[in-house]
Image 1: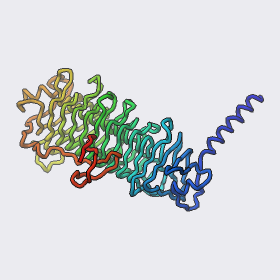
Image 2: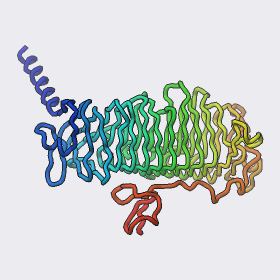
Image 3: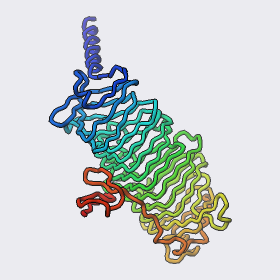
Image 4: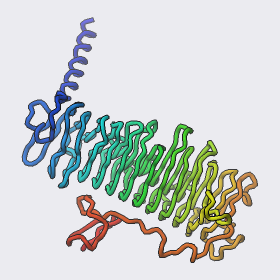
Length: 455
């Protein structure tokens, strides 16, 4: 009995000590910053030699306000975290670095739980720590960089709570342990991701893509670059999934460059999808082609997914496009009036897709008829006999649906000079966005599409 009492007392003491490492502001309307917190005894924030150090969990209560400090360095100790339950302004006019304190520190970084209005964040450099959204009002994140995220959460920039809207613009993600952007599978978070660069994320090499998105109405990914790591065989580019089989969710992936991943784009479940004007190239790093490697993979066991695919360059993937289940998949429907609701000029350009000596631009692994007119295929002559060599459908297996691919496109119908030219943000070596025009920059070294460029 004494032993049980002693154990219980020790457990309570440990619990109390752990809780005592959590500082919570009183919620009396005060505006806090790292500078002010460092002057409060017991806040867990100290300042020394130009660096703010957070050693525990600090909570800014509802009713209080937090303003990010300008141009400072903030280090998070082991399991340290800043939780923002009150309103906050995370916009910095000069770069603010948030990083870990010591190589062994596993820390979350900043978690936003504000429920009154959208949180603004800009010009922040996250290294080894991340930004977690628990807010119901969403966040607008612009010109921020996320590098080497430690995987304490499932993504460097975590979306949530349920129904919250997120706008992510001109941000840079590199070498994060897990996904760059993602959220909980049971949360529906509308998100627009625009002008962002993703390089070699999901370094843990789990079955997790760089952008791991749960379906919402709507999801937009445009003007982005998603470059994979050829040493990883489990990491895809962009995945959007509706895990619950309900609702209609509108998805747009437009004007992106997606290359060197396990697969390029995959959509799963009941969705309304538009994939337009993208470069989808060399997504081949799946070791077993039966498990992946598609430029675009459409999957829906409920047979209700709708997809419009047009204007894409789909080149040197293990499979060009694979369709499993789904409802209405339209890769080009040209022999109807242009003002018809399902008119699609096609204009997809397929080049050298295939695996194990078998060319494959389109694999219709469904019972549906797929229109795929107005496209150029990986064959020298755009006629039926030639195109059959790169399309798998009813002619190869009577249980499958037919692909209607004639009339094919012509080089003049797919104007190569107007083929996808994604507009990319230029970054300096600190991962800070510098705009889009190299001619306007001062001399130095910059990162463009993952490559160092000297000016």
